[in-house]
Amino acid sequence: MSIRVTHAHGDHIAVTAANGTEILRYVYRPDPEAFESRKPYAHPVRTLAGHTVTGYRPSDHRWHKGLQMTASHVSGQNFWGGNCYVHGQGYLALPERVGSMRHDGFPELTVEDDRLAVTEELTWIENGGAEWAREMRGLTVHSVDEAAGAWALDWSIRLTNTHDQPLRFGSPTTEGREMAGYTGLQWRGPRDFTGGTVFAPDSDADAEKLMGSQGPWVACTTEHDDVDGHSTLVFAHAPENLDEKSAIHESHWFVRAEPIPTVAFSWAFFEEFELPPGESFAYRYRVVFADGAWDRERVAAHLEGMPW
Image (cartoon, rainbow, N blue to C red):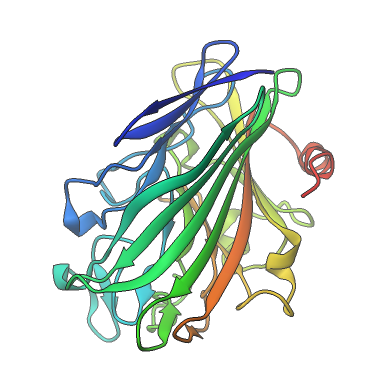
Protein backbone atom coordinates (compact mmCIF):
# COMPACT_ATOMS: atom_id res chain seq x y z
CA MET A 1 0.00 0.00 0.00
CA SER A 2 1.64 3.22 -1.12
CA ILE A 3 2.04 6.27 1.12
CA ARG A 4 2.38 10.00 0.52
CA VAL A 5 4.75 12.12 2.61
CA THR A 6 4.53 15.89 3.04
CA HIS A 7 7.02 18.08 4.90
CA ALA A 8 5.93 21.43 6.29
CA HIS A 9 9.45 22.73 6.87
CA GLY A 10 10.04 23.96 10.41
CA ASP A 11 6.85 22.35 11.66
CA HIS A 12 6.06 18.70 10.89
CA ILE A 13 6.26 15.67 8.62
CA ALA A 14 2.98 13.95 7.73
CA VAL A 15 2.33 10.50 6.25
CA THR A 16 -0.89 9.78 4.35
CA ALA A 17 -2.03 6.31 3.33
CA ALA A 18 -3.34 5.49 -0.14
CA ASN A 19 -6.94 5.71 1.10
CA GLY A 20 -6.41 9.37 2.04
CA THR A 21 -6.05 8.87 5.82
CA GLU A 22 -3.25 10.84 7.46
CA ILE A 23 -1.81 8.13 9.69
CA LEU A 24 1.12 10.02 11.24
CA ARG A 25 2.07 13.60 11.96
CA TYR A 26 5.51 14.05 13.51
CA VAL A 27 5.76 17.56 14.96
CA TYR A 28 9.24 18.94 15.60
CA ARG A 29 8.62 22.67 16.02
CA PRO A 30 9.34 24.00 19.56
CA ASP A 31 6.40 23.74 21.95
CA PRO A 32 5.19 27.04 23.40
CA GLU A 33 5.18 25.92 27.05
CA ALA A 34 8.63 25.33 28.56
CA PHE A 35 7.08 23.65 31.64
CA GLU A 36 5.79 20.87 29.38
CA SER A 37 9.37 20.10 28.23
CA ARG A 38 9.71 21.27 24.66
CA LYS A 39 10.47 18.33 22.35
CA PRO A 40 9.20 16.64 19.18
CA TYR A 41 6.22 14.29 19.32
CA ALA A 42 3.93 12.24 17.08
CA HIS A 43 0.27 13.37 17.08
CA PRO A 44 -2.22 12.78 15.72
CA VAL A 45 -1.54 9.13 14.95
CA ARG A 46 -4.36 7.20 13.28
CA THR A 47 -5.20 3.70 12.16
CA LEU A 48 -5.84 3.07 8.47
CA ALA A 49 -9.57 3.38 9.15
CA GLY A 50 -8.97 6.89 10.48
CA HIS A 51 -9.35 6.26 14.23
CA THR A 52 -7.18 8.63 16.28
CA VAL A 53 -5.12 6.60 18.77
CA THR A 54 -3.03 9.29 20.46
CA GLY A 55 -3.98 11.96 22.98
CA TYR A 56 -2.60 15.50 23.12
CA ARG A 57 -2.33 17.78 26.18
CA PRO A 58 -5.06 16.02 28.21
CA SER A 59 -6.41 17.96 31.17
CA ASP A 60 -4.80 15.58 33.68
CA HIS A 61 -1.28 15.83 32.20
CA ARG A 62 -0.77 18.69 29.75
CA TRP A 63 2.77 17.47 29.01
CA HIS A 64 1.51 14.16 27.57
CA LYS A 65 1.69 14.53 23.79
CA GLY A 66 0.94 11.54 21.63
CA LEU A 67 4.04 9.40 21.24
CA GLN A 68 7.24 11.01 22.46
CA MET A 69 10.74 10.20 23.68
CA THR A 70 11.02 11.29 27.31
CA ALA A 71 13.22 10.98 30.37
CA SER A 72 11.64 11.83 33.70
CA HIS A 73 14.84 11.95 35.80
CA VAL A 74 18.25 12.77 34.33
CA SER A 75 20.80 14.01 36.86
CA GLY A 76 18.16 16.16 38.54
CA GLN A 77 16.58 17.40 35.29
CA ASN A 78 13.13 16.51 33.97
CA PHE A 79 12.81 15.87 30.21
CA TRP A 80 9.32 14.39 30.69
CA GLY A 81 7.63 17.67 31.50
CA GLY A 82 5.35 18.87 34.26
CA ASN A 83 5.79 18.40 37.97
CA CYS A 84 8.89 16.71 39.39
CA TYR A 85 8.74 13.91 41.96
CA VAL A 86 10.94 14.69 44.97
CA HIS A 87 11.51 12.06 47.64
CA GLY A 88 9.63 12.89 50.82
CA GLN A 89 7.83 15.84 49.26
CA GLY A 90 5.81 14.32 46.40
CA TYR A 91 5.19 16.13 43.13
CA LEU A 92 6.33 19.73 42.99
CA ALA A 93 6.19 22.38 40.29
CA LEU A 94 9.90 23.01 39.72
CA PRO A 95 10.20 24.76 36.35
CA GLU A 96 13.92 25.26 36.88
CA ARG A 97 14.38 21.49 36.51
CA VAL A 98 12.50 21.07 33.24
CA GLY A 99 14.81 20.55 30.26
CA SER A 100 14.13 20.43 26.52
CA MET A 101 15.12 18.62 23.32
CA ARG A 102 16.15 20.77 20.36
CA HIS A 103 15.56 19.59 16.81
CA ASP A 104 18.81 20.13 14.87
CA GLY A 105 17.97 18.67 11.48
CA PHE A 106 17.09 15.70 9.31
CA PRO A 107 20.32 14.34 7.79
CA GLU A 108 18.30 11.62 6.07
CA LEU A 109 14.72 11.45 4.79
CA THR A 110 13.95 8.66 2.34
CA VAL A 111 10.55 7.85 0.86
CA GLU A 112 9.79 4.67 -1.03
CA ASP A 113 6.44 3.35 -2.21
CA ASP A 114 5.29 2.10 1.20
CA ARG A 115 8.11 3.18 3.49
CA LEU A 116 9.41 6.39 5.08
CA ALA A 117 12.79 6.42 6.83
CA VAL A 118 13.81 9.54 8.76
CA THR A 119 16.97 10.25 10.72
CA GLU A 120 16.77 13.20 13.09
CA GLU A 121 19.51 14.93 15.09
CA LEU A 122 18.55 16.43 18.45
CA THR A 123 20.27 18.03 21.44
CA TRP A 124 19.12 17.51 25.03
CA ILE A 125 19.44 20.80 26.90
CA GLU A 126 19.17 21.25 30.66
CA ASN A 127 17.11 24.15 31.99
CA GLY A 128 20.09 26.50 32.32
CA GLY A 129 20.99 26.12 28.65
CA ALA A 130 23.86 23.62 28.86
CA GLU A 131 23.90 20.93 26.18
CA TRP A 132 24.02 17.58 27.95
CA ALA A 133 23.47 15.01 25.21
CA ARG A 134 23.22 14.48 21.46
CA GLU A 135 20.58 12.14 20.09
CA MET A 136 20.38 10.38 16.75
CA ARG A 137 16.73 9.36 16.32
CA GLY A 138 15.31 7.04 13.70
CA LEU A 139 11.67 6.94 12.58
CA THR A 140 10.52 4.39 10.02
CA VAL A 141 6.95 3.96 8.77
CA HIS A 142 6.54 0.55 7.14
CA SER A 143 4.34 -2.52 6.68
CA VAL A 144 1.33 -0.43 5.66
CA ASP A 145 -1.04 -3.33 5.00
CA GLU A 146 -4.60 -2.58 3.92
CA ALA A 147 -5.61 -6.26 4.07
CA ALA A 148 -4.40 -6.59 7.66
CA GLY A 149 -5.72 -3.15 8.58
CA ALA A 150 -2.41 -2.24 10.19
CA TRP A 151 0.82 -0.31 9.83
CA ALA A 152 4.00 -0.02 11.90
CA LEU A 153 6.31 2.68 13.22
CA ASP A 154 9.85 1.86 14.30
CA TRP A 155 11.43 4.39 16.67
CA SER A 156 15.10 4.21 17.59
CA ILE A 157 17.36 6.28 19.82
CA ARG A 158 21.12 6.54 20.13
CA LEU A 159 22.04 8.99 22.89
CA THR A 160 25.57 10.28 23.54
CA ASN A 161 26.60 12.08 26.73
CA THR A 162 28.25 15.41 25.78
CA HIS A 163 28.31 16.62 29.40
CA ASP A 164 31.53 16.59 31.43
CA GLN A 165 29.83 14.51 34.14
CA PRO A 166 28.06 11.13 34.02
CA LEU A 167 24.35 11.40 33.22
CA ARG A 168 22.24 9.51 35.78
CA PHE A 169 18.94 8.14 34.45
CA GLY A 170 16.12 7.28 36.86
CA SER A 171 12.38 7.54 37.44
CA PRO A 172 9.92 8.50 40.19
CA THR A 173 10.30 4.94 41.51
CA THR A 174 14.07 5.29 41.84
CA GLU A 175 13.28 8.47 43.80
CA GLY A 176 10.98 6.62 46.20
CA ARG A 177 7.51 6.44 44.63
CA GLU A 178 6.33 2.85 44.25
CA MET A 179 5.39 1.52 40.80
CA ALA A 180 5.87 4.82 38.99
CA GLY A 181 8.86 3.93 36.82
CA TYR A 182 7.84 6.00 33.83
CA THR A 183 10.57 7.23 31.51
CA GLY A 184 11.69 6.49 27.94
CA LEU A 185 9.46 6.28 24.86
CA GLN A 186 5.90 7.00 26.02
CA TRP A 187 2.48 6.70 24.42
CA ARG A 188 -0.52 8.59 25.75
CA GLY A 189 -3.81 7.31 24.44
CA PRO A 190 -7.03 9.25 23.90
CA ARG A 191 -9.80 8.83 26.45
CA ASP A 192 -11.32 6.05 24.31
CA PHE A 193 -8.55 3.76 25.62
CA THR A 194 -9.38 4.38 29.29
CA GLY A 195 -10.39 1.04 30.78
CA GLY A 196 -9.37 -0.81 27.63
CA THR A 197 -7.98 -4.34 27.48
CA VAL A 198 -4.24 -4.84 28.04
CA PHE A 199 -2.40 -8.12 27.48
CA ALA A 200 1.06 -9.58 26.93
CA PRO A 201 2.43 -12.72 25.21
CA ASP A 202 1.98 -15.00 28.21
CA SER A 203 -0.71 -13.17 30.12
CA ASP A 204 -4.22 -11.83 29.75
CA ALA A 205 -3.69 -9.96 32.99
CA ASP A 206 -4.91 -6.43 33.45
CA ALA A 207 -2.68 -3.37 33.27
CA GLU A 208 -2.19 -3.25 37.02
CA LYS A 209 -0.65 -6.74 37.05
CA LEU A 210 1.54 -5.96 34.04
CA MET A 211 2.91 -2.78 35.61
CA GLY A 212 6.66 -3.17 36.12
CA SER A 213 6.77 -6.48 34.24
CA GLN A 214 9.16 -7.48 31.47
CA GLY A 215 8.54 -9.03 28.07
CA PRO A 216 8.88 -8.60 24.32
CA TRP A 217 5.56 -6.82 23.79
CA VAL A 218 2.39 -5.41 25.32
CA ALA A 219 -0.89 -4.73 23.48
CA CYS A 220 -3.85 -2.45 24.21
CA THR A 221 -7.31 -2.65 22.61
CA THR A 222 -10.37 -0.47 22.91
CA GLU A 223 -13.79 0.17 21.43
CA HIS A 224 -14.11 3.76 20.25
CA ASP A 225 -16.77 6.28 21.09
CA ASP A 226 -18.56 7.94 18.20
CA VAL A 227 -17.73 5.25 15.63
CA ASP A 228 -18.50 1.53 15.44
CA GLY A 229 -15.02 0.16 15.65
CA HIS A 230 -12.10 -1.08 17.74
CA SER A 231 -8.37 -0.35 17.61
CA THR A 232 -5.34 -2.29 18.80
CA LEU A 233 -1.89 -0.92 19.57
CA VAL A 234 1.11 -3.19 20.03
CA PHE A 235 4.33 -1.99 21.69
CA ALA A 236 7.33 -4.20 20.95
CA HIS A 237 11.02 -4.31 21.84
CA ALA A 238 13.76 -5.04 19.33
CA PRO A 239 15.55 -8.25 20.41
CA GLU A 240 18.72 -6.48 21.56
CA ASN A 241 16.75 -4.34 24.03
CA LEU A 242 16.14 -7.45 26.12
CA ASP A 243 19.70 -8.79 25.82
CA GLU A 244 21.58 -8.03 29.01
CA LYS A 245 24.87 -8.16 27.10
CA SER A 246 23.91 -5.40 24.64
CA ALA A 247 21.41 -3.19 26.50
CA ILE A 248 22.80 -0.58 28.85
CA HIS A 249 20.01 -1.36 31.33
CA GLU A 250 17.07 -3.73 31.58
CA SER A 251 13.63 -2.50 30.53
CA HIS A 252 10.26 -2.85 32.24
CA TRP A 253 6.75 -1.90 31.15
CA PHE A 254 5.02 1.14 32.58
CA VAL A 255 1.40 0.50 31.63
CA ARG A 256 -1.95 1.88 32.76
CA ALA A 257 -5.51 1.65 31.52
CA GLU A 258 -6.98 3.48 34.54
CA PRO A 259 -7.28 6.33 35.35
CA ILE A 260 -5.35 7.24 32.18
CA PRO A 261 -4.28 5.12 29.18
CA THR A 262 -0.49 5.12 28.77
CA VAL A 263 2.43 2.82 28.00
CA ALA A 264 6.14 3.56 28.35
CA PHE A 265 9.20 1.48 27.49
CA SER A 266 10.85 2.27 30.83
CA TRP A 267 14.62 1.94 30.77
CA ALA A 268 15.09 2.84 34.46
CA PHE A 269 11.98 1.60 36.30
CA PHE A 270 13.42 0.22 39.53
CA GLU A 271 17.10 1.20 39.38
CA GLU A 272 19.17 4.07 38.03
CA PHE A 273 21.90 3.70 35.46
CA GLU A 274 24.72 6.03 34.47
CA LEU A 275 26.05 7.09 31.07
CA PRO A 276 29.69 8.24 31.31
CA PRO A 277 30.91 11.32 29.40
CA GLY A 278 31.43 10.53 25.73
CA GLU A 279 29.60 7.20 25.95
CA SER A 280 26.36 6.25 24.16
CA PHE A 281 23.41 3.92 24.55
CA ALA A 282 20.80 2.75 22.03
CA TYR A 283 17.35 1.16 21.95
CA ARG A 284 14.92 0.25 19.14
CA TYR A 285 11.16 0.02 19.48
CA ARG A 286 8.18 -0.86 17.28
CA VAL A 287 4.55 0.23 17.56
CA VAL A 288 1.84 -1.41 15.45
CA PHE A 289 -1.40 0.51 14.88
CA ALA A 290 -4.26 -1.78 13.87
CA ASP A 291 -7.98 -1.68 13.23
CA GLY A 292 -10.08 -4.20 15.12
CA ALA A 293 -9.81 -5.93 18.48
CA TRP A 294 -6.82 -8.23 18.01
CA ASP A 295 -6.20 -11.17 20.32
CA ARG A 296 -2.88 -12.53 21.56
CA GLU A 297 -2.52 -15.05 18.73
CA ARG A 298 -3.11 -12.45 16.03
CA VAL A 299 -0.64 -10.03 17.60
CA ALA A 300 2.03 -12.72 17.85
CA ALA A 301 1.51 -13.83 14.25
CA HIS A 302 1.65 -10.26 12.92
CA LEU A 303 4.88 -9.48 14.79
CA GLU A 304 6.45 -12.72 13.58
CA GLY A 305 5.73 -11.63 10.02
CA MET A 306 7.71 -8.38 10.52
CA PRO A 307 11.29 -9.43 11.28
CA TRP A 308 13.69 -6.81 12.57
